[in-house]
Every structure is written in structure tokens, then in C-alpha cells.
Image 1 (tube, one colour):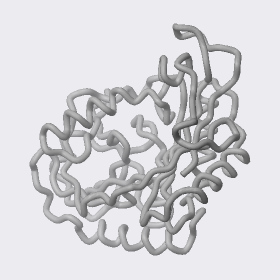
Image 2 (spheres, rainbow, N blue to C red):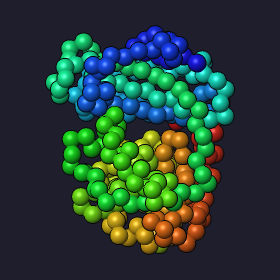
Image 3 (spheres, helix red, strand yellow):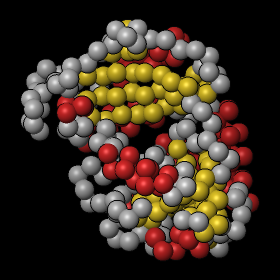
Amino acid sequence: MKIWLNGELFAPEEARISVFDHGILVGDGVFETIKVVGGEPFALTRHLERLSRSATGLGLAAPDEDALRQGTLDVVAQAPEWPLGRIRITYTSGTGPLGSDRGSEGPTATIIAAEQKPFPATADVTVVPWPRNERGPLTGLKTTSYADNALALAYAKKRSGGEAIFGNLAGNLCEGTGSNVFVVRDGRLTTPPLSAGCLAGVTRALTLEWCGGEEEDLPLDDFYGVEEAFLTSTTRDVQPIRAVDGVVLPTAPGPVTRKAMETFAARAAEHIDP
């Protein structure tokens, strides 16, 4: 297996980045996770486009999407034939001083691969006590500043949750640490709008396109009383939620969720780069 670093392939033990890289020092970078199925990256174009949006939103130079696309294909070609894999593209502002000021040597880009273990058939989720700031400067950007997500997921796992769920400052449902949330009420499928502060997930967008549904704010307190709910993410696809803070939902998967799972699986099998 090889690692792609700034345009070259290296053995894992030979790939090195500077300890002065701002991705390490201050979390000044963006990233994408891409599912690999049958030796092919799924929805690569959408992920590269979102990486560019995140980079420019962070004030970084736009990455070379063509180089990253080829780098991704090269890494996948060198990887073992896993049943399911994942690619991680990371793009930082590069080396810089010991502070928030950026350096001038240019960005660092890496592409690595790993096996992806399947998620459980259903998820129990835990609502965390810290809200997302839907008005913050990083809202909607997939940055490497993930400490709040790591803390939230650890909080959830201590309470037997497989994913942590955030509300926002307005008191509405927002997102998971690495997932978007869909709910069913009165037979209607909805998901929080991007204005709620959630990430514009690639799987979220495909679910809306392929399965229908509407963007609609949901008071966080109402999350416990929905008929059905599910998570979407690159590595989960559509995963039914069984319980919220120990409150078991009526069905998991319910009929709307099951239809979404079937539709997503069928369409994804037809289109590797939708």
C-alpha cells in the first residue's frame, strides 16, 4: 500500500510531513473521506468539489482537483482488495510559524487508504450538551479542526451511543459528528437545512435527490418523538436509528427508512460517480 504526498507515492514508513505543518499545529486544513467499493472510489467528483469549497471557505488556495483525482486512483490501485475501503484526502495550509499566522511555503496534500469495517445494522445515538454554532466561520466547512467531534463521540460512547448528535444555538436538530440526520414525522421525510449549521454531506445530497425529502428545521426536543430516523454518511450510506438517548423509536428501519436504504443502494450500484 502506498501513500500519496504532494504528488508522489511513498511507502507508509517513508511518508513524512513537517511537525510545523499547520494541519498539526492549529488544525488549519480540510479533508474528505471517500468510500471505495470494488476497487473504485464512490462519488469522487462530488467529494473533490466539496474539498475545494471547504478550502476556499477557509481562505486556502484551491487544490488541484485533477492531481488529487489521479492521486486517489493511484492510491486505490495500490491498496489491498478490501470488501469495503475508505480514502482520506487531507489538504492543509502547509508549514507555518508556532501560532495562527500562516506560512508561505504552500499547502500540504496527502491521500491515504484503509479498510472500512461495516457499521451495525442500526444505530443508537446520544444527544450531546454542546450546540453547534450555525453562525460560526467554519460552519459548513469540512475542516481538520475535529476536536469537538472527538469529544462528542467519546461522550456518546460512554453512554452506549454509536454516534453523537448536535443541536444548534437555535435549539434545533443539526447533525452528527460525521453524519447527517433524517427524520420521519407524519410520514414525511425531512432533514435539517444547511442553515441549521450542518455539513452539506455528499450522501445527504444524494439521498435528497434519489429518495426525496425536504429540508426543514426540527426542534431538538422533538427528535425523541419522531416515527423514524436515520443517519447518512459516506461510510454508513443510510443507517437506521434505533434509539435516541435510550428512547427506542417505533421502528428501525421503518417503511420510509427501508425504502430510502433500498433506493440508495440500487442507485449507488448503478452510478459509481453520481
